Amino acid sequence: MTGGKRKVPGRATVVWRCGKGLGCTLPIMLVAGSALAAEITLQMKGGGFTIQGELKAFDGTKYVIESKALGNMSLEASRFDCVGGGCPSQPIAAAPAGAVAVARSGQLGTTTWMGGSAQGTAVMPKLIQAYASSIGATVVRSVGSDNKILEFKLTDTGGRELGNFVVARQGVPAGLDGLEKKLVDVVWSARPITPEEQAKAQKAGLGNLRAPGNEHVYALNAMTVLISPDNPAVSLSIDNVAKIYSGQIKDWSELGLPPGKINVYAMVQTSGYWGAFEEMVLKPRALQASPDIIRLDAATDWSDKVAQDRYGIGITTIGLIRNSKPVNVESSCGLITRPSNFAAKTEEYPLTHRLHLYSSGLPKSQLGRELLSFALSPAMQPVLKEVNFVDQSPELLDFPAQTARVAYALNAQTEDFDINMMRTLISELKGASRLSTTFRFGTADATLDSRAIADIARLAELLKSPEYRGKQVLLIGFADAIGSFATNLKLAERRSAAALRSLVVAGGAQVRTQVVTRAFGELAPVACNDTPEGRNFNRRVEVWVKN
Image: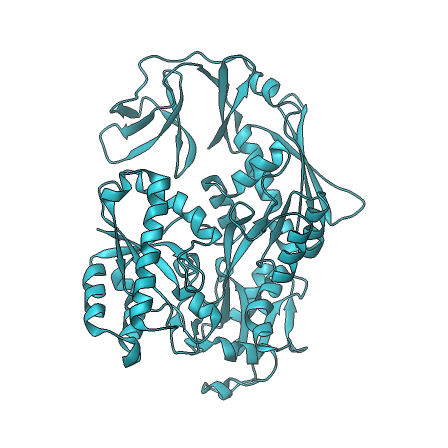
């Protein structure tokens, strides 16, 4: 169920709701001056379920609320009791049919987004469909003479045009060029822009595209290495995966496994997923793909062909593992990470990468602004799951599920280790669960990166929900291993304090009574400290919830 709200001329706001495939109900009118902006709590009759949100409408039979976690929802008054302050005492009359159409007609404008083929084909059509459902609009798709360009026309229930969304699947470099020429509003990318691209954009007057407000992380992707369930391998190092895909390792016996020629599978070279794999695995090692790789077009085959081949190895996204066996990834320092949504959301699974949207401030059209906001909202998360990306909805993982990490930390080098502090860390976390929300920082500083700033807002809203109200939350600062232990401990303290300050700004003073900070320096690393990427993962603040 989806919904939205818009102003109509005069003194009212219209709220509507649409069910998937069911059309939209008559809008409910919110009379100006009513107390409907109040936060209310709805409790299922008989108990067992409670939901909280901002009251948007009430017609005597249904409550329409906006839940920070779930978006707009319509709930039957016969099944729920409104408890506490802010509950409506009287129903509000319905607006005439067609009010939404009058309000929306011709107001949204046109927005053009550009980027690579993979996201342009898989994600952008789903984005506009989900957004259209949320406002009760219809989408008409067309392809012009250039089949790389898709156009989506939004119309209201009367067939009147509301706006146009142009999706140009012409690559990130072309998108950044279009952004500089003000022909493109948003560029999507499976990688961060390069320093050279940033310098060029700044010279063109676009400002710092890596700054918060211009760089938006809207999803994550995690590549998974697959083998047959009949293959006894459990873990592979990234170096060995690179050697297999470049043709340097050709037989499983070279890895201490039963002999057999390795059959190497991968998606076609034009796939954005292959590009991501190259960027993370081959290019950092100055390697090129072997010409002997068996290329597969269908996404289901990426897994299924490997599952049927005892000597096969393949790669896919974490959402398409299917019947094959994923292998753990072993880093250069011996740290082993199991592929999981949680590890991907924390970005501690080594083959995880961010999916970005770049803009120069807010898009000029209303449609562009609303689409960008929608892409970063809770309502977008189910869409990301549908296209097999990793969404940004927080997940919890209890302490016993993280024994491998603790075991690795206990085996750290003596000069980087404080056994008494490690005992304190284990004691502090033993009865707690880690939230996947993790804040990361630059080298030797306590400045939140662009994703962390967005995650602060998400966490602030999450802590207001009934599930987390009253629970103690720990913000635990960590550092990489560059520098002295004492210096890194102070830096970790600064980071947890910076996260708390930002959280108080986003969530209000009540956060201070619920959240405490801790710091453990370079203890309990989540990645190896021998590479810049690993050190980046270790400069972090974790969020733990006491049960």
